[in-house]
Length: 71
Figure 1 (cartoon, one colour):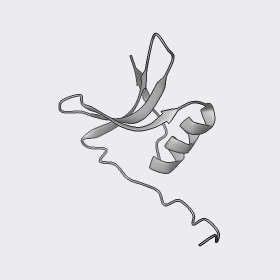
Figure 2 (cartoon, helix red, strand yellow):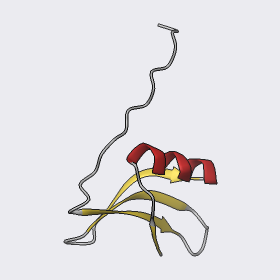
Figure 3 (tube, one colour):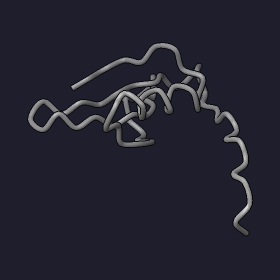
């Protein structure tokens, strides 16, 4: 019950249909990491990014090296 945490498994996404993206708010500066569908442009939110550590965790979890920012 209170044992060691298991190592987080790398999650996957479909790179043929989705592109990693960071949606940024111009007004508040809020950033949300997720994936943008290449066909219709729909954005799927994964996590709120509050610091560089959060962004690094997102990149490590999904094996992403580059991420597109859009407003």
